Length: 627
Image (cartoon, rainbow, N blue to C red; front, side):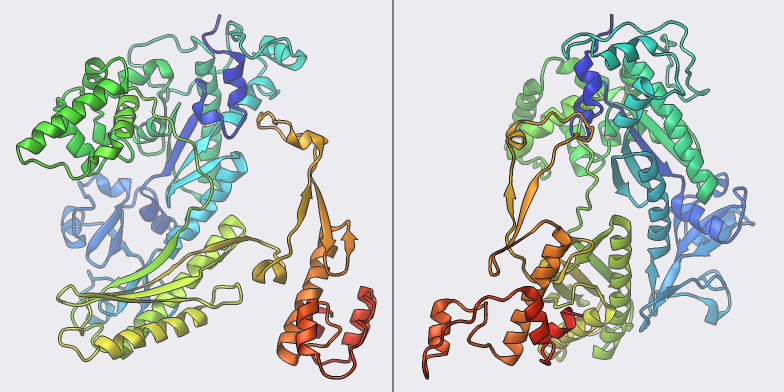
C-alpha cells in the first residue's frame, strides 16, 4: 500500500495546492551560458567555438567551449585572449549617446587596435534588449507545455509539473501501465482519505541514463512519487528538445519536490543535462554533493553567511549537522539563534541581516531547507514595480545640460522598447504613472525629481523624453551652477507606479467606468472545490445597466459601446458647454446653471438612435466616437 493518499494526488491537479502536496513536482530549467549562446547562434558560430560575451573590457558570459581554457567571468577580455588564441569575443549591443535605438557593432570592441573601432562607456550604453527578446521566445515554448510558469530571471524558469503528470498518469494513452488506478479514478471508487493502490509491476517507463540521482542504488520505483518524477522527466526532456530544435539553445534541468531542490538539481550536471532528485534521495544529495546553506536560492548573500557563522556549521555536511542538532522542530532552532545573538551582542558583535522580528520565520526556513522541504508557490504574474534605465558615467561624458539630454534620449528609447516588449509577453497594457530622474555627482551627492506621467495609455519615447527634459531642467536650474555638480558620475530614468490593464479596454476603462452590479446565483455562494479543472455549467450573471438611460444590455460589448457614448457626450459638454436638458446634470446643477427665464420641463429621455442623429450636426468631440 502507498504512503500517499488520493487527496495528495488530486491536489497536484490544482494550481493553488500542487506545490504543497506531498506529491508535488517542480522543474527548474535554465539556459546554459545564455548570453554567450545568444551571440554564438546570432553570429553563426558552432558550439565548439570559444565564444565569450563582452561588455567594454569585462566578460559577462563564457561559453562552455571557452571554459575548457580556464576562462571565467573574472577575466578581462585581454586576459582571456592570452589563455585562448582562438577566442571569439562578441560585444553586446549598444546605444550610442544621443540615439534612442540600439544596434550591434560586430566590427568593434576594446580588443581592436584601431581607435575608431573601440567601444567605450563614455559614448555608449550597453543594451540587454536582444537577450530579453530571446528570453521571450523561450518563454513561449514553456507556456506552450506548462500551465504554471514562474520566471526566475532572463534565462531560467520554474515549472509546476502537477497538471502534466496528473494527466500522464490518469488520462494519457501514451502510458499504458496504470490501468488499475485509472479505473478507480474514472469510476470514483475512492475516498479522499484512502491510500493510493500499490504500484503496478513491471513498469515500462524509465529514467534516462544518469538523470536519476541515486548514489545508494535504491529501488527506482518504490511509490507513486517516483512514478510522478519519472513522468515529469519525460516531459521536461521533450520541452528541452523543443527549445533546442526551435531556437538552438541547450538547457539544464532539475526535477524535485520544491523550487529550491529543483534549482540545485539543474545546477548539478551542466551543460545540456537534467537531474531528478527523488524524495528518497534528498538527504543523500544534500550531504554528498557539498551543499551548504548558502547554496540555496535566496540564501547566498549576507544572511546565509551570517547564519553559517552563527550556527557554527562545519565545512563538511553542514545541512546534516542542522538536521541532527535540531531534529524535532524549528522552535528549538529559533531559541538557539536568539541565545547566540544575545551572546554576540553582549560581546559587541552585531548581525545586521538577522532582525529579531523575523527570526521565527527564518528559523523555520532553515529547518525546512536542510530537509529539502521548503515549499513556496509559483508566481506566474508580472510583479513589476518599476523600470530603470541607468548609466554610470566616466570622465567628462556628462559635463553639462546638453549631455544630460543626450543620455535621456537613450533612456527614453530603451524604456519604451522594454514596456512594449513586456506588453507583448504578457498580453497586457502597462501604463507607468510616475517618472523619476536621478543624478549623482563626483562627491556622491544625489539629487532627483519626480512627476506624474500623462499619456494616452500607450508608452511613447516622445512622452518620456519631454517629461525627462523638464525634470532634468529643474535639476540643472537648481544645482547646475553649484560647485561639483558637473560632470555627473551617474544619471538614470525610472518609470514606476504601473497600472496593468487587460487588452481591449475601452475609453471608459481608461478614464473611469460605471459600476457593474454582479448578480450571483445560489450556486455561486457554495464553496467551489479547487480541483484544477474548469467548472461546467457555472456562470456569473452580470447586470449591464445604464443608470442614466435605465436601459439593460445583454451583450457586454454593446454596454461598453453605450458607455463610451455617454463618456463622449460628457467630454463634449466639458469642451463646448452644457445644455439644460443634459443627462449629466443633477436637478440641483440644472437649477443653479439655468435660473434665468421661464423654467422649462426637461425633455423626455430619448433613445440612443435619436442622440446619434442630433449629435451629427454638432462639431463636438463625441462625434468622433459615434463613427
